[in-house]
Image (cartoon, rainbow, N blue to C red):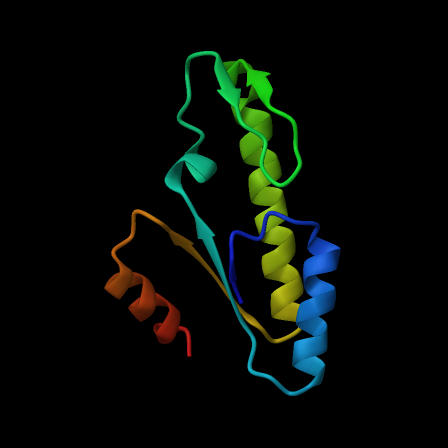
Length: 109
């Protein structure tokens, strides 16, 4: 599975469990933009909602620590659940050259 994985962890894992139950070799690759992980914003910013979410004006300096905790908690929850189901989990950033990303994923095999 190749995705940003910005969805409910339980819903994601339900689909992955089905694939695993059918004896598929499941690999989960989370693709993230560096800004999603690092949250480098300093000035008040209007974040445009995607997938049905409303636009949200934000004071990034007040939100950064909480955002990063939630981001990491979500990723670690998925990583742990994938490991429990014997699925490979990798995070790949969009600033990583493609050939390095592929080598990183294949090295886990």
